Image (cartoon, rainbow, N blue to C red; front, side, top):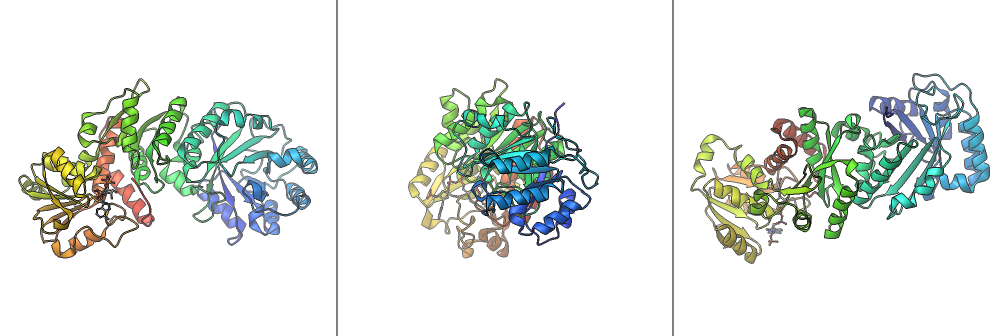
Amino acid sequence: MTTPTLLATSIVHVRTPLGEQVRAAAAGGADLVELRVDCLGDVEAAAELLRQPRRLPLIVTIRVREEGGQWDGDEERRRALFARLGRLRPDYLDVEYARWVAAPRLRRTLQRLCAAGGERPGGARGDGALATPTAAAPAGAPRLILSHHDLRGTPADPQAALRPLLDAPADVLKVVCTAREATQAAQLLSWLHHHAGSRPLAVMALGPAGLPTRVLAPKCGAFLTFAALEPGAEAAPGQPTLHELCAVYRWREVRPTTRVYGVVGWPVAHSRGPHAHNAAMRHAGIDGVYLPWAVAPAEDAFVAFMEALRAHPRLDVRGLSVTLPHKEHAWRWLRANGRSVTSAAQRAGAVNTLTRDDDGGWSGDNTDVAGVHFALHTLGRDELKRLPCAAALVLGAGGAARAAVLALHELGCRVTVCNRTAARAAALAHELRCAWRPWTERAAAPAALVVNATSVGMYPDVDESPLPAQALRPGQIIFDAVYNPPQTRLVREAQQRGCRVLLGEALFIGQAARQFELWHGREAPVDAMRAAAWEAAARRPPAPDAG
Ligand code: NAP
């Protein structure tokens, strides 16, 4: 039987009384609390908390600056502080492995503390209940966490570079690297998966790209992972909050059998995909989790990421949404590997969905045309009836514009394309057999329906609109593909002028729902997806976002 992974949160300030923060941590789902004494600036408050009955087990950490902490004082003072707080019997003491090796006095002090048993202040869970499988320490003695932090990056070959750490004489070995992108997170997860059976391990990657190492810790057998108590209280860059981990990523439900999905792009940190897909899987009772995978823009980076997944099949990544700038990379990668691209992707000229097939290979699909149909079908029946033979204007000539032209053709509209770069409009019109006009004529083109498939109005240029307000007519249907922010300037002005408005959110949900169907073989719970995506938008201000 595998031991469930523990969720820790760090206390890094004394603005709120420490006891209150521990109560909030317990209420937020933490199993244990790390007292970051190097950050607190109030040793007495930490000592007082250690004397109190324990609501949650406590880790005492006094982290040195070169390993990501704020302690840059004298090592002898740090040793004395460890000795003082260690005598109050925290459940764990955390010290850097490099210092353990290099500082014999510090090492002997920690050895003595960890060998000295005795009573710990009483409490429901502070009594050794979280003993590690290897714990040889006497009851009541703190257990030793030896940690290693690489603040510069992740070794190119973690299997070889991190191997010596496995000999560290600790109850728990904690390895923290810095991930510039998702491939490094995947490699660290592979290392964790490989060694988690042999000893209690906590392996994490710092930075936003490291999020998968925290979410998938229970899948890969980690002893422990960390999340922040609240926004702004992160003890390390890229830490999600307890709420985010438990509510958005369903962390408590992630287990070794959990299938993994996600979105590959750059940037992806603010994607609403995780909200929509995780809510949908929860609603449908599917044992899966969907994550942002931040893969650097170069094609090589995309290929390296897919190779990392191939090298680590136990990670069990089953499906990926592909967003900018990797749609073409995905197409070429599939072709180079002799894999298939569906007719929907061929028509759309882009791959926005990858699905792992039963043979372990991948196939490529496109769900944007289905997304446009989904959005248009939120119009009432009467408005839909007006579309065949209606004049439709599509602004833009990229992937979204292409999907819009295809869907509008299928509905029988007469489509005209306008794009800033005329040559792209002409090429798209030629290929998809529709009309085109120069960008300067966009306001004059008569249209019952206008689709904005440019990025004009998207964060951060939220004060821009692709059409002057005077060009909008009452009764016109204005469909803005931009969904960040949800209400663009074009949408606001269209509403003011009596237009019928369709939001980019509907396109987003439509294409995500189709992905859900492709991956899970059942109808998508679109209401749950929409509610989760809206809630995410309401919680967060607009931000750089590719999907
Ligand atoms: P893309 O392939 O990069 O195309 C961008 C388009 O925007 C091009 O036609 C470009 O014109 C035009 N454009 C950019 N800046 C402009 C400016 N200042 N003035 C006029 N035109 C400008 O991107 P895409 O994938 O088609 O996406 C386009 C938009 O749709 C984005 O905002 C994206 O977020 C949104 N989208 C939303 C969803 C959804 O689920 N709601 C799905 C896909 C896309 P040039 O050819 O002249 O460069």
